[in-house]
Length: 120
Image (cartoon, rainbow, N blue to C red; front, side, top):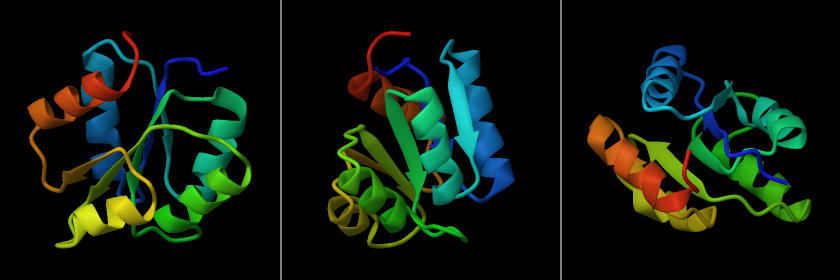
């Protein structure tokens, strides 16, 4: 069962902390991970209701994370966060529900999160 937290997955600590802090300031509960492998562990114990997912990360990238989730039958809304020019294509490749191109405005972040997850 999901716990209504948001999982922020990014290997860049500054981005991860900025996004997590901004969401916390808006009243959301937030979990963080620095790569896809850590994110899998968080999903197993915290069952977040939404994942904000960077794509290019060490250890296990966004594609690998999404593949493991599919293999395990775990379906979570995923928002792809990337600076890549082909951000929407990458989002489609992992079955993402939305895409935020870095750098993104915090209002865009909040609007995307609000559209994809239950109330705080």
